[in-house]
Image 1: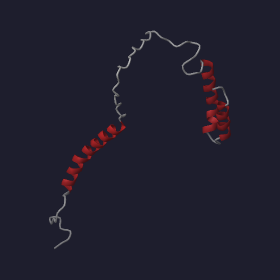
Image 2: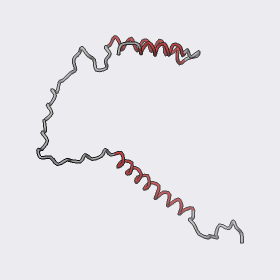
Image 3: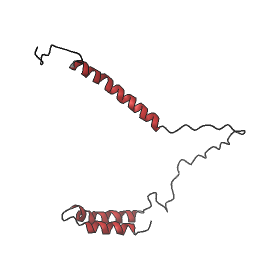
Image 4: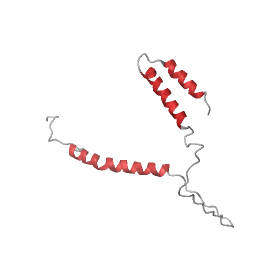
Length: 119
């Protein structure tokens, strides 16, 4: 008998059967794994403690539709002049940091200068 005879089958899967099993069970396994991960990441349910009095519920007050934050304090913490200054400093230092000869002292000095400013 030839050991390389393709027609001789002692058992096991054919290539077509193996591909079919992979194509069928691999996506199903991925979906099941995703569901398990979603269930594990779900926050734990809050257990309701029985009490003699129901908890008081307060209705949130609706905010006006045209509410704007006060102009004296910008949302980002920087006014326009400060933001412009930061961008201009970055543009002047960027070419020294990321272009040969890669002056890391400029980067460190710039970083330290930024950290010593008001917070």
